[in-house]
Length: 254
Length: 254
Image (cartoon, rainbow over all chains, first blue to last red; front, side, top):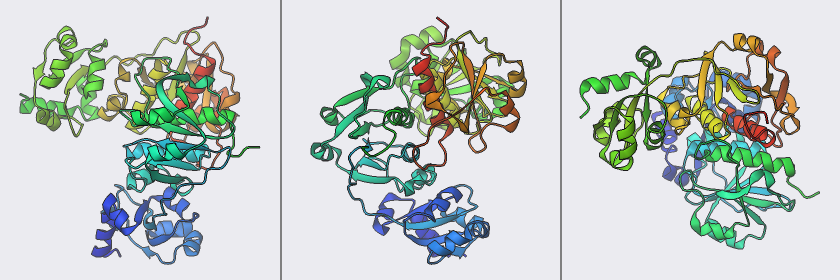
């Protein structure tokens, strides 16, 4: 059974401030939990339904130090999903550290992405296209927001995020920087350097911040054939990653 | 001022059954309303803020037969958006009729898409890539759902949707049919016929229905480099449309 105290704690982790104080976040839903169980993340607490336990018993026993079987309704009173049939894990937040970018690697850079669903979808896309690292501006929405974690569909276990001051990061950077803008070179004609690079995507409403524009070496634009004024940033990321992987199908120089 | 009666009517249009009974749907938000005002859709009722009126006065006066200035809070009590600073229009539903597909034209076919946001995003993508028509299975989510209309960002005014029995539609069809599956030909190697075609996208969880598979001439798969198990259907649509428009940049045979 979930005690009142545990419910209160789990609910507190819906809030960013409390997640960072506890250095912990929630993972919910069958897909995300099943990926969590085969990841390197540390599970601090695990509350699951009997049905989920039956299905993933081996992984649970080898990964979780402790677990409790609870009812769907208890999970629903503590979690962020309307319907809960799998479980909720409390997971230790990894340290926020700069990734080591290898030669040949491409990295996404997110400038002030605000929608949790967009960020989660971008993480899922990065995982599909084998992009291992994402650099986020400090004002980008929190990856540990339960909505973001859910939208990654488990991909948060394989893609590393680093929150930092983008201007300082770009000042220190030595590899090619691509930026997505409305008036750049047609993406279909872009040459992606085999040495690797950074690809900046901007805020949903305002695009890339003006103070970051001087750091962009190659401005790219997704060709528009019709009349929609813009594409959603996650859509833009999908199209850009697909074009990148058409040219540079792997992360290492061969 | 919005009367209790009008509020009740506007709220009733959040429900599919009542939209179809009234043959009317809601359009909300500045972007969607501004596109509506320059479209061919018939506006039955228009409730707008003074700020929106000031900004779009000419379009409003030339398009709307009648309008009323109301307060944000009144709009919020009647509409589906949490915050309302522009207005709400009641719009006549167009007739659900089969499109005339020209030679050289590509058309999306949606099989049981369930998420209103996904459908709206797909309509916005279609508009970006100049895809003029979308054929939807009868069980696909309603385009006139307020969440779907919002997600189109005004593109619902330029892309025609037709709801029908897909099996009957495909039986009568004579142009090439492409289907997105997990085990097809690499999208980057697909040849899109200049004569045009249909591109089928399947349900979020179950993909394309088994009974439609025999109608697919070319099975295509988005190349996966990393480890995510799947892509969201709207992401898949973005990547497929971009690949299509790389080869076939326009809707007519030249």
